[in-house]
Image 1 (spheres, rainbow, N blue to C red):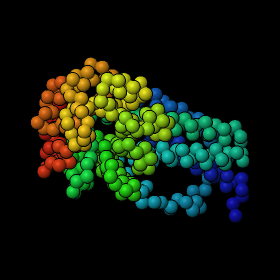
Image 2: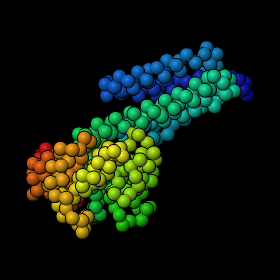
Image 3: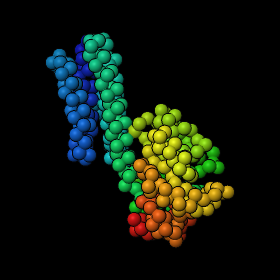
Image 4: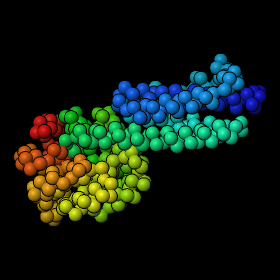
Length: 337
């Protein structure tokens, strides 16, 4: 049987290495992938601090040859679906290692344990900053936003649009059981990950959290933006529908990351809703300091009018969801920008 103190030293040694390795993977992407000096520097500082706690007695207790865990693995560790999955996995790895260090260090050195606790909070902040910046950067680059509607061959249509270059998808399915919504949302999130697209859930913050969506889109009668931010955290995207300048101003002041501007034209998606028209699009061009998407009845026949009125980004539903060839339709819509 291994001596108790030796076992604790081995645990501290292994998790100090694990945390530093995970941070180095994150640091490399911040440095070379994002040119993000601040977050790269934060990772480096944490690695150096971990190194200062890595005492010789911990390293001496290491026994790799007799470590029963070296052959343990899981299929999910053998491949990553996307860059985001790779980053998320290593952030989780660091957080788990820091929690182990915090708990076992309580048996060894209270100051060490306290330092690991504080570093764990630093990594939570790093996670929010990292994914928040990446998501917002991609959001600003998106010209076309697809909001789903129930159709035959639902997933085939969505994937076809992603193949056509779509980078922003909102899952909207009002009349469906929650279990079905959960399965559909999870599969859509996987599809978006595969194509490097953002995945937003309409209305349902709980569903967005359950499938780790990139954010949520809220209507005027849904949860307030501030509460959604508390629940989702700073790293997620929050969008808000607006139909007039007053609603726009409130959404911006409340901290929405983007807004919907419309409905521009009459649309069955918002049956009975009076269209805001191109005048509201022109107003948004002159007054909205955050990304905004013209929405409502926009299709291949009128998109040029909407862009001419000032829209740099548009959202569509039926034009793609009901298209005979969603891939080509998506490509053709994107050619307008």
